[in-house]
Image (cartoon, rainbow, N blue to C red; front, side, top):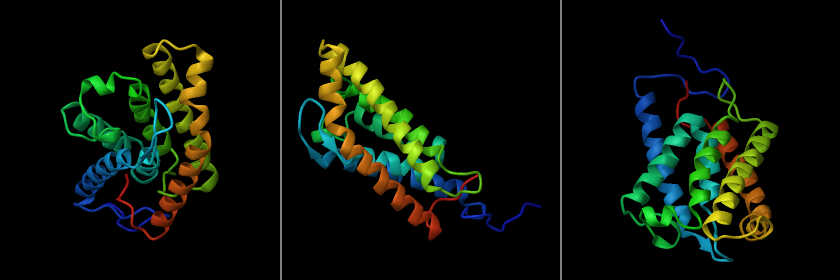
Length: 193
């Protein structure tokens, strides 16, 4: 017989745990898409709230389901739903200048998901380090992609695709982590195994 009492901040397992996680995964995919609409264009890669929701998905869902949420979002965009920044969609957009960031966000979701402890907790230090590493994953793939798609020098790719976003993304990591920790504390997060 399994223990149904919660350990730490994790919710007890139930027959509905898997369904609960799937609903949260779909919800986070939708929020990632909504975040793409909240943009401030400052160059070839816009500042959007999308990374905030990707960080939040990782912190709340763990690595597997956060990657599934990001993958569901990408699939929706590739098949033609207008979920990419500015209401864009299609494989052509994914292969354009911002494609490296979109693909890198799969790694971002994974790395943020690793911040949760086995008991379901989300410590500040662990969450912050995971968030900063996750931002690095997105920057690395995005800048490399940007360099080759737009035929830029490395310096120009970093200047256009990384430097303007550092303060915004650090702020998004901190706010997403604070929100996730609050939800964990209130036991509003999906059940975890």
